[in-house]
Image (cartoon, rainbow, N blue to C red; front, side):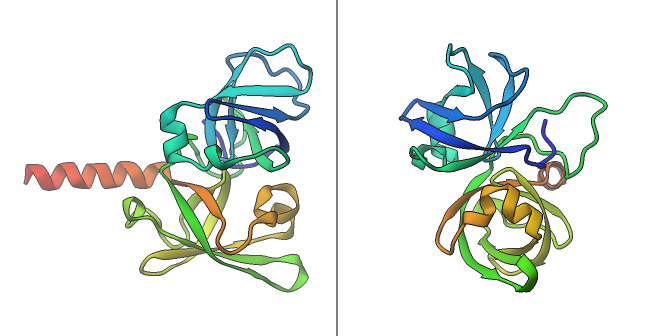
Amino acid sequence: MFSGIIEKEGLVKKASESSLWISVSFPKIKPGDSIAVNGTCLTVVPTSRKNLLMFDLSPETLRLTTLGSLSAGQRVNLERALKMGEVIGGHLVSGHVDSVARILEKRNLPKGFANLRIEIPKNLVGLIAKKGSVAVNGVSLTVATVGKRYFEAALIPYTLKRTNLGKLKTGDFVNLEADILARYVAAHLRARNKII
């Protein structure tokens, strides 16, 4: 589990159809550890190179996330898995991306703030609520507005500087993960309707 509070941005050194290499200095990372890369939970693979993390990418990961479109030189959001007892500064994020979505509009606001309008993919309709939480490229955001097929989130200067959300532009694609509580409520209601 993760919290959606990004610890570092990493630099993609190499990306292929089955693996991803990211340059970053993370203390005490070892093979087998889980790290969220742009919100996608990946497992660290052994490598002998210092400050270079390697991850295997499964066909499922490539199908459901933006990781397959990464190339050398791009920046990615990174967060290590939570340990029991740690403060959850954002919201509970599983690292299991629900869908890829397009940025419909990025609007820069005064004093370094910005507003993102993001499409709601069909499979997430009803799972994103005003004042609820959503993970965008692994970043925990509060939903400000929900439209028929979009939602909006306000970004503070700190988030824009410390994550790759500051580099996004209209038309870019991001990884989305709905709030885990919304998933369970929706699953419960679907099951209940089938029973009744």
